[in-house]
Image 1 (cartoon, rainbow, N blue to C red):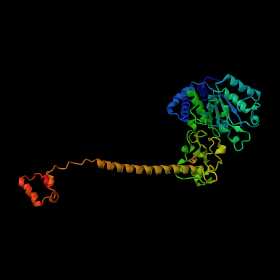
Image 2: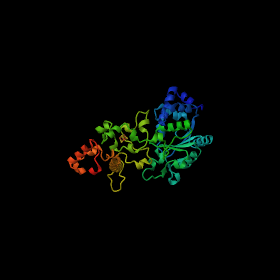
Image 3: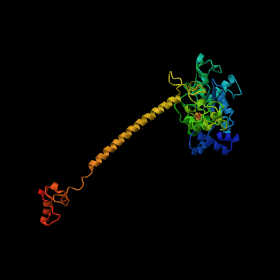
Image 4: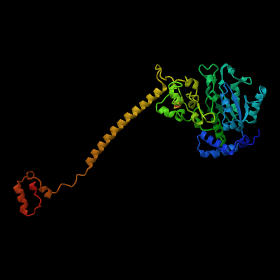
Length: 412
Ligand code: SF4
């Protein structure tokens, strides 16, 4: 295939300008960027060369590769087959054995520090790596070698991220994720399988900004794994109204009610399945009637099982206590503490108001000074208080001929 850039490759594949811009807008949405970034993404993709990829498969069912190949979304297929320059993938090579290994090593030399290493499946360490060999060598050795010369490593699917199904239970092969073998630039895209849109978004982010997207502590891109599935689920209103399916096929299940009581792990799982969906964005498992199994959670086979029950009790010797009940109790405790605090604050507020009222009362001016001796007001005082007989009092007023004349001191 000619290597004259991504846009030319997409046009050759029949992608119109309109669908290319729609693709750019969809990538902006998948990266949780404002729509205004779509032109910048389009310009970056237009001006980029196809990105070389070496795709290694360890202990895997092939589901992640299938997710791409079976996708009927033309944008994603175009990305996989045209935007990416797949230099090595054991399922796509037209050769096998030593020639296949030669294809890989020559691509590593040709594009050193310029290709993406995509790893699918877990890597076993048991029996000196004999459980999974690539070209007769332990997969761990080959993966370490490929990742060392890569621009970045992307683990696709839960098995590549933390061991997945091969690491479940007693983990007989010593299966683990790729993290320990990858370099500093590493991104995990868990899921069973990975959603191809998320891989496309990571690659487009790299092409646009020349770096991997922001990630959480598990190296998962925040744009795809930054919110609970439960918060985005279309059945959420039924959860809020207490409308649950309690048996598979019952009336609640048929009416699309919440699957929480049938073991849905949406409230404990971070991911974007409800928004990106699968199969031309038509559906995802909860929409199709099956609860979320938590496949994007680290070590989900062990941590999120059993699939059709709520998570087991986290409290020793109390098997009937669920994680949700503990969460509810904690919430109740917090609410109780806040209630007590609120009451205490109310009492303090009331007391402060009373104190302030007393202080205001004490600070009120005493009003006009008492009238000076002899003021008219004093004249109205009962005679008994001034020590004069009423007759004497009136006589005193009349004596000086001034009706308002002050009463003499002796009159007080
Ligand atoms: S079906 Fe699952 S993810 Fe959806 S609202 Fe119910 S518990 Fe949450």
